[in-house]
Length: 199
Image 1: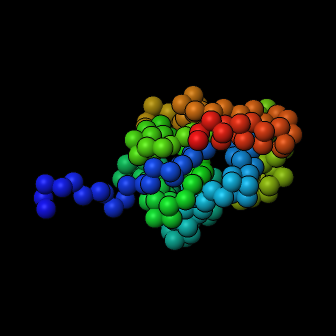
Image 2: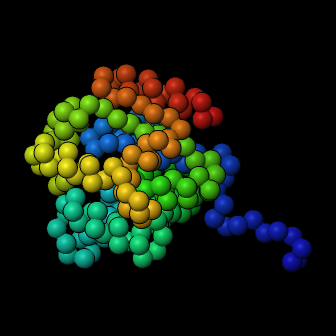
């Protein structure tokens, strides 16, 4: 009957944890994703993969400029949190703990928090260390000079526009912050400790 509140079809199960990850370029977001997916059974949803699909559909070159342009256009045309909400919808259907990589705007953080049971992780490391790691990855967006790497990051660190990348503000909003200047195992220990606090 009309008097009974029907549960929303998209409401996530209470036991499902949605984890977002933010951080500086090359800080170790992918390393944390590996730990959560391999050891903890989290399902991985990647903003980067979503954007690459959109870029390829438009016949654009796959590089950081295209990613920033397409992401900003999608957010401006829909909402600041449009991309992560698309990924969150997929996660709800899957019904398992999930990790969304990576969160870059304040609008995304606010939207995911509003959906409940959301935790934001942030990771950072020394710039020279991060550049070496990113360059070693050798992806389309990482094969750049140190100067370009730093200038790309500066462009994404702050913005007054809620639709645009603002890594600095996102990192300040994180529930758990990790330093990745040490070994992979040291990073893993920090993440495992945070996971225990989420339960």
